[in-house]
Length: 304
Image 1 (cartoon, helix red, strand yellow):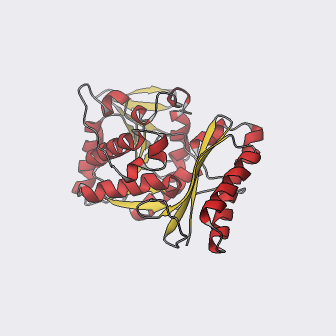
Image 2: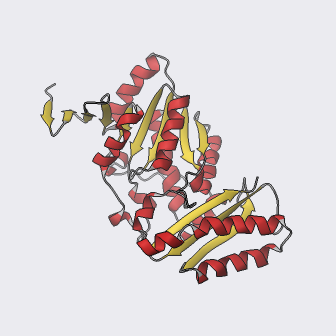
């Protein structure tokens, strides 16, 4: 099959290899069939496969997941797919920060084996109507404020698992509820993939890294780390025996008085089921979602 060179990219069918002078080629595939052809070779050689699903706009949080995969897996696949189904009608799909070439270049020195960057049409062909729903835990917290969000997440992740059959898949604890939902889906559907949760990566001032942090104005960026600080203050007060309802109400007021414009939730929840707790427990997770300007931030901390 003929190959053509254009701006440093080698194209063969739906497979792309990006080369530079200092790294090995990174293979980028666009179709399910091409990815499965590569996976067949790996499986024939009894190689383990790690999958790192992302929507691109990569940062150090994503890179920590990739490094974890590289340490546990013989081969690592990173996906770059902005899933339109998990954006609500008033959310930021049209302005989500997409720069595929920058993402690919950022992966050059990490020894990633394959990037899977399918189109929407490849992931959702005409007539594709099956959805996966994780009730109860999927209806809480983020699910209450973003109806249908976790159905879309579970569906696309399940499709990625069916396509790639990974031995391991890596998700950050920043999206803690998502991590629990993926674990529940894998358990319920007997998917033979080990889900590996990875710690939150933060800026020096405590702000949890997120692709959407680029939306923050200079002024809002200075205030944004307060969410993490407030979560830790909630933990300290709870450990000291303060009444939880009062502690949470004070925390909300502190955020609003400091420049946050809306609090979606601040809660202490059971760390396994995310049901809200009325009394402090070391088997808990403290989670928050709040708006500053036009940017919605989420964060959470472990209790022990």
